[in-house]
Length: 59
Image (tube, rainbow, N blue to C red; front, side, top):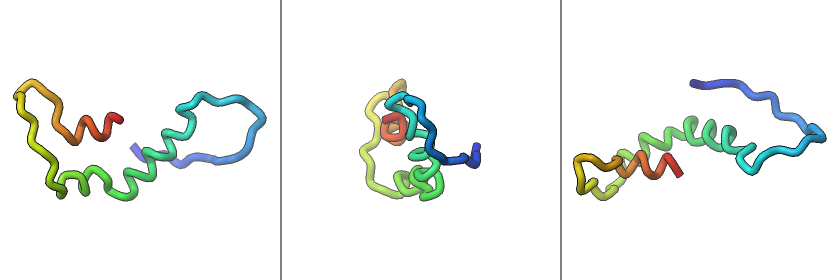
């Protein structure tokens, strides 16, 4: 889900999470998830747990 954003200065307060959408867009353009899959990330120990990549991307 790629969207174009209009970045400009406005005199309004934003939440601390205001820049996260731009950060996520950067990670998507860098193919961050694909790069994580190529790394040697430890395997999950439980079949009910989250995959390590899901935990990293959730942060």
